[in-house]
Structure formats: C-alpha cells, structure tokens
Length: 208
Ligand code: GRF
Image (tube, rainbow, N blue to C red):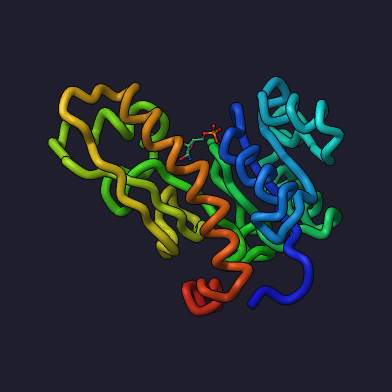
C-alpha cells in the first residue's frame, strides 16, 4: 500500500494523451493520486499547452533552458522534488533521464511502451516504428508494457503488460490507434495497482 498521498510528476514530449488519461482518472476518483507537476522538454508540446489551459503546475526544462547535461538532469530532479512528486510518470518522453533523477527516484519512475517488451523496444523504437516492427515480425499479438525506468531505453523491470491483438490488414496506423486506446486505460489502472499495493515497486527494483 502506498504511504501517504500519491503525487505524480509527468514528463511528456508531445501531446501527452496518456498523461491526460491518467489525470482524468485522478479527477474523477478512479485513481487515488494527483498531478503535482508536468514537465516537457518541448515548450510547444500539446502537454504543456494543455497544462497551462488547465491551470496545472508545469515547467519547460530542456537543453535550451540548461545546455549542460548534468545541470539539466539536476534541474529535472530539483523541480520534481520541489513539487513534492513521489512517483514520476513518463508519458511519451523522448529523452533519457540522467543519474541525479534516476537516483533520487530509484524504483519510482514509470514508462509505458506500445509493445510487449522486451520485444520491439530500445533506442530508436518509438512511435510508428514500434508498430512497423511488430508488423514486419509477423506478430499476431502485440500489447502495452508498463515498466520501471533505469539508465537504458525500455529496459527496467516490467511491472504489467496487456496484450492487444494484431488484426489481419492492420497497418502501423491502425495498430497504433488500437494500442494507444488500451494504453489510456491500462496506465492509470497500473498506477492504481501500485497505490493499492498489488504491485510493489521496491520488490521489483531493489536498491543495489
Ligand atoms: C505512447 O504510445 C507511449 O507508449 C509511448 O509514447 C506514446 C505517447 O503518446 N511511450 P502520448 O503523448 O501519451 O499521446
């Protein structure tokens, strides 16, 4: 069982539809958590525009605001810490996190990937490319993976997966659409399982 309020910190580079689906769950009470901060590396992102329109706390932190990689990493860790974030949620975040953030939030950073990891993940496997790889491999089933984040792309311990069928005649676009719809339901449910204690993050990723 999660101790105290669950305060989510989102990192999103683009539209942030997963982030918005999770916050919708927070607002209507399906998920016992709240959005404490929304960070994007992309000042023009739909995620930040939406956060501003909704009067939710947000920050633009990127190589433009912090040219030095270590300072950028520290700025992200500090912003999350100052906002009282205790669970970090990557939602279409295209950048690697640095050691300051990874250490401060050990076993407290989630990512969602639109395939059944460890298949079809890793550097460069994002967006449409993931679904193209699934189709090229002739998979009949793909899915959604929520995992803990470590210093490698799409690599940390897997917390939960949901299968999604590949339909005859699918192209990358139709498959992406079906998978994304499942993501929107699966991400908040997985976070709720963390909150309830059904998923134990410390057991999944012990401190080395
Ligand atoms: C999702 O497909 C997610 O699996 C991947 O990036 C995409 C983000 O989409 N990590 P959105 O920004 O949440 O709409």
